[in-house]
Image (cartoon, rainbow, N blue to C red; front, side):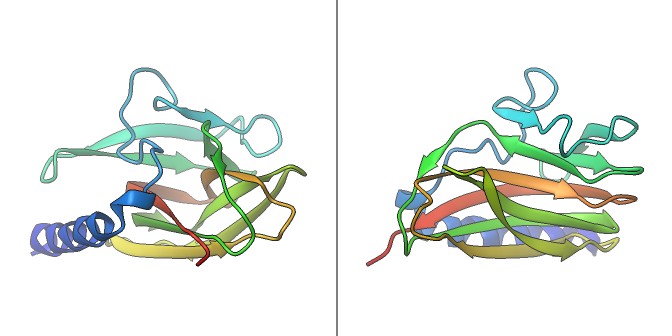
Length: 169
């Protein structure tokens, strides 16, 4: 039953993503691994990285996909996509991911210039759950990069991360 529910959620996410494909950002949200961390992703050391924490990939056999797992002991941990994407005031960033685990995590973006961030806090559960973060940015932000993370003492897996910019009309 769990496999059927997970498969239905992922199929729904893929269908929604296909509708807005022209604005989809290439963030390697399938967490393909050519090295550690996954290709195109970086650990935010030392500011947002727990040296006693862990990062690992979990293969979800039913879906033939990877999930990235972050485990923090004493400090919040952020993993960021190394690509920066242009944005203007009024644009919205839509992040979607399946999440499970214990504790809390984030879906968000670092902003440039200025080095700020926007994020949505999420509460993980033992079952895969879809989370959506809709983020907007102040006028001075010209670029963003996508970030996922966990709070101190949390263990969270992220699966099928997608990122899209909805352009201001």
